[in-house]
Length: 141
Length: 85
Image (cartoon, rainbow over all chains, first blue to last red; front, side, top):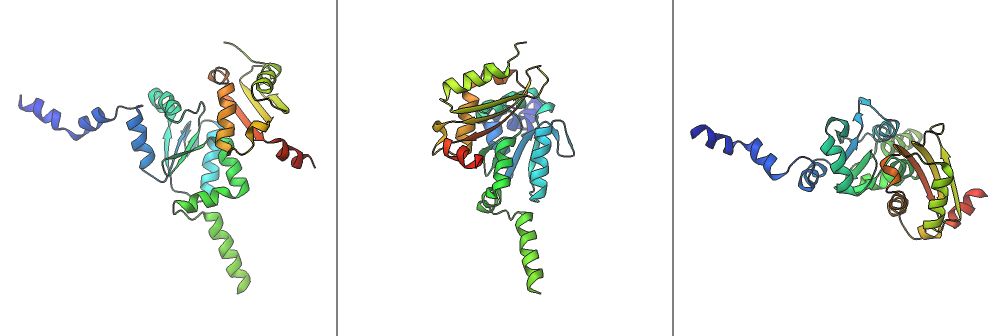
């Protein structure tokens, strides 16, 4: 009886009950955790798909600190995220809880310079912007 | 597993999105698993990228279940014309 009570009180169990892996609540929580959150195949250190790799490279260029979730590690995450965002492919990028798109869209935002603005809106200064400022400073010196 | 041809995808997009220009390249050597497409449609006018891509994804919802690599560019007729110059 006593041990059963302890089990119920276990915070891990309660959390799992509240937001089952792959449910809407589960993803709501994940995308809130950091300003930039991505769902990819593999990990940033070892991407398992060219599109996921491209996303990692772009975010690295901008010096963004982000959460990455490997959909290959959990089938319910892989399917669930597609339903959550109503987007059929991986990778997927979220900025400030908002679904931004997949690899093609991130790449285009990067090329047009819009990604710098999108990041700025949520308080992230892109490393590319800092590099530009540094360069201007150098010119002034 | 169903495989799709460049022609099939081109026709479907052209028809459903009233596209004025569609380029489809099968990059899987005919396996039908990897496509690169360019779509030019007046339906994209005034829509942000995400919505344009959602339109294409919607048209190919069934196909994208088996196509595992899909890359697209979505342009309005005006943007396409500018790009051609």
